[in-house]
Image: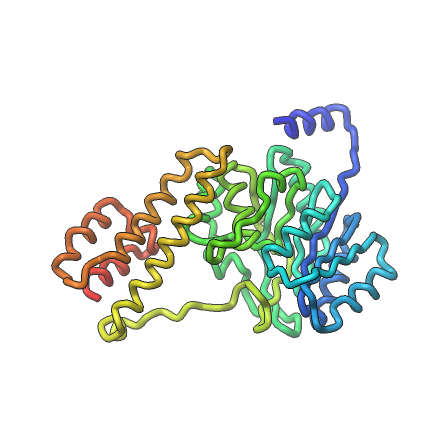
Length: 344
């Protein structure tokens, strides 16, 4: 509310206050693509005020490239080399905490920003003082910086229907089913970090950007710009990201494979959702009612993972999950996992 009142006063009296802009970049053996990313940050239509780099003990020329860039940069570049390897999530936590800016742009080492990325996202946050973060779509490029076709939103099916659902206040429900927000496209107010840190590291797949998006979505404080404001590089050496498709199990294989190969991933999914539920329930500012579907989802996967070997005895629990509509937690094509649970 304070941000909202301040924003209205500034607009009323046309007072302009400089908002300090930081870029938080984490690096690890990024020499190959780093110069292109640094140039795209330097070429922004709205200049940033500082670049903070946390390097996770690179063994290539990463540090030398950053130092060379810093020597001619119009803005300060602060380089921190970790004493030991922290990993992606802890490294971003450190980097964000070292930034001085009012608004911080997260940056990977191997992408390329559109020239107006900072301008667009800063304007969005200025126009929406009640929000703490904004993210965007991204074009996909290859090792040679050539478009591969499509965007990351197309790959994860963050389509018009899901975007409308997000804007209707159901962003947290979308994120319960899968992560949508890519940290490389994210801009966040520094003031929000106090309630987001420390980032949890014990939940599988819950890296820094997923945690930030999840918590802010439950508060209704994160929105998106439906444009590709960066070019997101898909390559084999990236630590996290897109491009790794899960191969679907063929129908014939479902009747031949060891049943444990089906149940183990279901139990892992249930455990992951359970850990996430416990983390979010422990936050005093998160409305409990918004966690209901997450609670039901983890119970659903525990039910599926615990189905008996005997197919006849599976009938009652599977029908119960079907009638309650819980198989939608497993797939938009909800009938497929239901049939698989009955027959496989």
